[in-house]
Image (cartoon, rainbow, N blue to C red; front, side, top):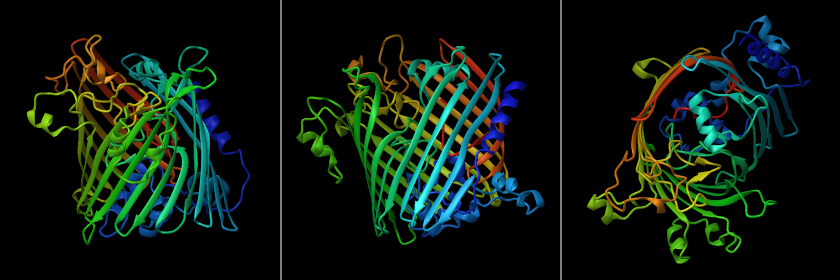
Length: 538
């Protein structure tokens, strides 16, 4: 443990000594997806009449700056002392590592890192994460933006995470793994980047390999950042109170292609999302979502019909007699007042009204819904926030005949990390005082997992053609499994520009069914630049 700590601080010191540089005022192009960062700004943009469309993330930083005091929110709370005025103090506490602002070019370069050590007290196992990388961001004339980054990682996780990695060959959200030479841990990497162009107040475009998220919750049942990065083209059109988004994406199954020179099998997706802010004070926001997923087939080629940027792909799919997977969803947010928000989602993977009304458990009743509540400055205490959310997903939702058409990419779900056939309650309370943060989290899940070789509807990577019963299906069928997950974390914000923080915490997980009872108690300490979300609470 002591050796790992010494290595962590040595690598950190080297990272902050790599570059020589000048000036200080670059701006990021996209506001990071990290939940802690978004919680910090939500209470500002949820005020009445902000005219923002907040469901599809990441948000454009330039758009946020027009409506909220983003730069002051992100400014560090530090004394103007002697150390903080030095070069080292400025770079450590309040500035990008390298920053250029000249001739309409704003450019920043920062190291990204996650150095974490921990201990599973139940299994008596030491764990660690060693992430090193770089992030470059820039804007030109406040209209064109670009960014690129990479992470190189070595890690050893607690046993329940190891079990998932060994089955899926993927670290959740972070890429395909290779075993380290000593056999104790994994080596993996990821890269991301993109370019964008804001043509005017009506149109903007993004071409990227990255993640997206639709919704106001901790989870998304429509499209989440749970899976690995994928390439996409995103087009936004904004008029009056409407925003319409089209996304064309290429995804992968970790199945070798028919030709060894081709690589993994490809799958394609088209997403449409129409968002509208309703009412004079825009208290209600409603969104209509649809997606179609289809697999690569040399005999078929790319389906040009799905390039149509107009809603209602279902009639197109029917006209083609297509075997593809089409999903329809709804997203809602209602501002009770600027401090209290209700939100929800509904996903229809398959919907036949007469089968739903009969209530006889037809296997094809594949639906999911979410209900949630957020409160800011709880009980009048500044920066005391809470969130509570309920997610419900019926059996076989998001699955299809093959993995080339299911709602997944790179062996990971595109929506909820637990797949299907479950319900979940997850709640947070967090508080910020100056640069100190504390958060308490509680998660309770019940899920039906497959019994023996039966497909009971929880595994979205199994063909739905293998369902054993046409009728009589119900939520939690299979082996009823209960998971509770508790976490309390403490952190200190060192530099808000990169969300560089020092953190420590403890997680407690219980996983129980008739065949297994696994308890994990995990203490951790680390320093990291927290710009994205990774989900290990499953």
